Image (cartoon, rainbow over all chains, first blue to last red; front, side):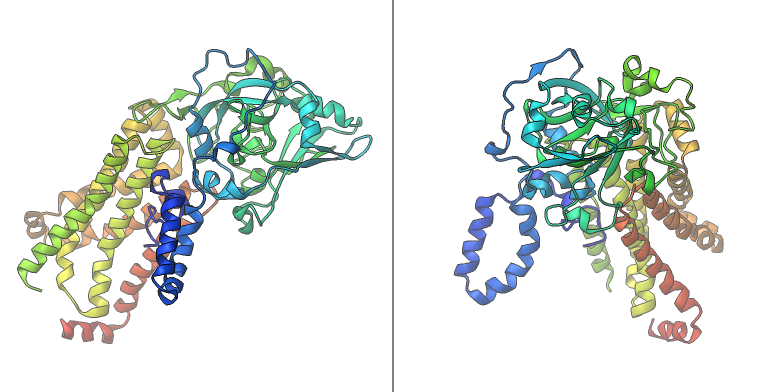
Length: 332
Length: 204
């Protein structure tokens, strides 16, 4: 029944518990073989639709949750209650892998985060590329526990592992003309089914002002919970700006461009009145369609209620100085 | 269709209509509602309210297209299940989502057309549910029909409410909008085709 939200045709509605295990699925295939080719051919057509979800379980294979060795703990977010790993990795906005929150965890399994290079372009002394391996050596990896506030008024607390973007900016040697940094994400229709439909203007593009990019809070994350990033969280490398709404954090970054003009970012292009370039967390400026003054913490449970949203997501001390004199109601 | 058959069909509707609620309770008890359980319940109850609304609205097109009339008797129970899920939807929003933070909630309703549209649809549905009993049908006579034509407006508001929720991917709201347009379209078509109407009346 195509009209139902709960339709099984929509992968976003498939509960992990409903997903056929590989064993059962393969047994069914054996059965089909045994039942005769004619019957199998007909039924296989029906099953093929189901199989896409069936062979890609939400829970990860043991070998894909690889630990990162050698990162230091930091004081960032000490005392915060972490959002559970399961929630962080199954509730994702990553439209390249589908628009449902549970789509990325299912659809991103075929995505290959290695080998990977990031090309550095634009207003730099010399355009160059950096491999993910070299990026990991640019600066010591550190764990930072950051709050993540989504523009949809929910929030998480995530222990990222990464390095300050500032270290990459330094390595890139931008010229004096570089006023903004543009982040361009992978958009491969082969491994990213969402890219095949024009829901957003691909590739996903985000941007920061130069001072925001080099702010000590700004992180290039390569892992979470001490492990390399799961694909659905933006493997192999993504941007994390905890004082801005989550959509600012471009995932699977393939290109970093230093530019002299404010980049046109993807969500800005999709709805300029709803998603500004700055996208700083601001409880006083509502999204046109919903309130931003409070948020639902993910993992708080059915009766967990809401908490008040803080200016700059509680990071005023570190970032407010960058916006003094700016009208944040207009520059939302 | 015989009376006992209708009773059987109605029982089946009750059973079917309570499945979505049972599923929510089952998933809730087993902590299986996902990372954002409140959103899950909001979407689920909202969707089912809309589904029952559209099923209710298909009874007349079935009569117009097939000449069958027995299903018209099912409108009340189907419509009331629409109202039941709409109530759960609102309760989830007021209680679980906003935990009775009335100041926040009032701002949310007043400032955001999406919520306002949904809330208007709910308010409009209250008198319909309240006058759905046989006593009120007799008492209101021809006014009852007029009053209950509000359902068309409610349906349009409900689809708009869903449409405005979506950030970018409009696939699902489009399904519902198309369903509604078809259901209303059949009515309009028959209204302006008197010869067809009379044919069906004869068949009745």
